[in-house]
Amino acid sequence: MSNISLAQRVQKLVTLCDQRGFQDLDDLLLAALLKDASPAICMTEGCNNTTDMEPDQDQGFCEACGGKTIISALVLAGLI
Image (cartoon, rainbow, N blue to C red; front, side, top):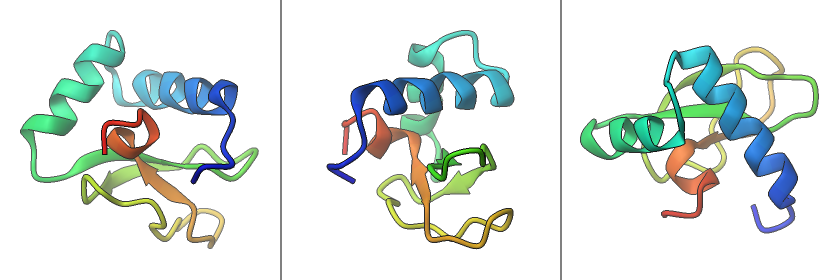
């Protein structure tokens, strides 16, 4: 997780907001904090598969590309 650049984190969080219909990052993170499952996104380059995962997930399985590359928004934003 620590080898993900700030630019890549921002890009994936923006993509997650866009794909899930959130107006901004604050709305996304608030929703993630208030629910049992957090929006999450695949970190593989070229794969923007999104799903819901445990809030602390940092190695979730991606059904689109097959990697253990799904990270929750809360982990990606550095809140967990």
